[in-house]
Image (cartoon, rainbow, N blue to C red):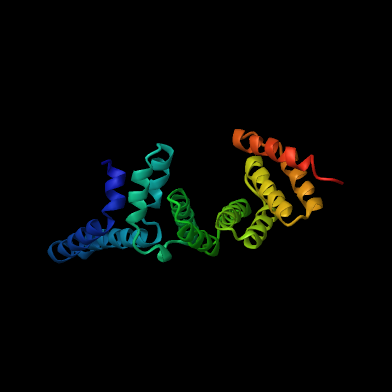
Length: 216
């Protein structure tokens, strides 16, 4: 346990200690000194509710310590009190964990809460709608998937792999609807995105075999 972790995780007990220390100094020494730990305690309590443990999570994710990151997320008891940009990050991370755990209903709810909180950039909002589209596809709701994927590409996506993925899924839905003209348009947009992800490139190759057989 490093010092920063200790300060973040134990903010409330430390704040209580600082308040006690402030009153002790105020009564025993002078209030000119006593108010300092009390102000520090107020800042600690404010940070507890507005930031939570989110300031620690990135380093855990970068280190690949998913269990540690989940544990830190679980320490946030009042997510709706988090500062808006922090809150959106909290819900997006929760949604990723829920998706991996196949809890699609929870993931969908968390993504919508993240969008509602306000994502910092349009590309992040686009990614959220891409994820909502993928969830709707897995649930068999192609109408909702189509709407979410259209929103994703309209808002913009952070990289060419995500862009290609969105257009591939739109192309697949268009094929299901027998809208072959749109299917070709979306497929060409996916190909023109020039993705580098091996899985996405393979999906383009597979779909190209079907697209080649479509007349017109």
